[in-house]
View 1 (spheres, rainbow, N blue to C red):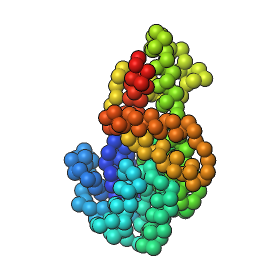
View 2 (cartoon, rainbow, N blue to C red; view 1 turned 30 degrees about the vertical axis):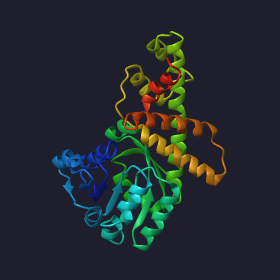
View 3 (spheres, rainbow, N blue to C red; view 1 turned 30 degrees about the horizontal axis):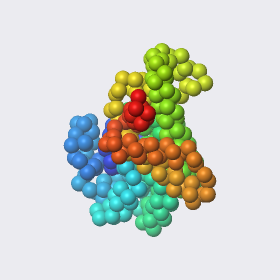
View 4 (tube, helix red, strand yellow; view 1 turned 180 degrees about the vertical axis):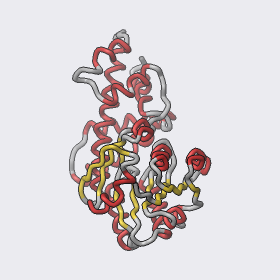
Length: 293
């Protein structure tokens, strides 16, 4: 297997296990994060620390970012000591964050000016998928660029789908997040009604999870809801952000997303109630509190 020099910026809940899988696959890894302590486990695995995004880019053939939102990616990519200030011509910048499709297209233009290839390649599969290396990756950009970095992406995901031109990966991820967000809400409301009606929730879950109501969310998040386990696999604040991006995109496309708008507001309620850093399953607690259950 060819070894790549890979740079990874953003070592949060998703980024750290993704970066770990790249090291485990035998690639050379340079990392950077706003909080250096987040890199400790990766440095113990053999990764090397860089003091800035520019240094990461200068030392890498493939630069990956996994950051919270569009402004974060723009700053790291184009701000002071940024990726594009350090990247060598011919290198590939792969943004695996979930950001605005418009921003992804803007980054593609900026990268082209700098002689850097760009892909928007957001992921789905949650923290579990990041740890196991089984994420689904939706890619926007030239397919020849995707093929160039496929061996690196295969370290973190087992389903890599080329969606189209720049921005198409982010658009696909937004569609995914609409379905996820509404599915979480459906699980919460169904379980909240069951609780109020006096049903045993564990018995209900066993009865329905393999039927027509079955879903990844029901199987993976509902048990956490029943155990009042609010630890984040994916945070409320990020789900709210993703649904905001969906509504902004829908506004440009003139597509009504009524259910998405309701779900977005409920995630914002959870955020306003101090649950922004908790897992999305905490919406169950919020729904029950709204009903005084």
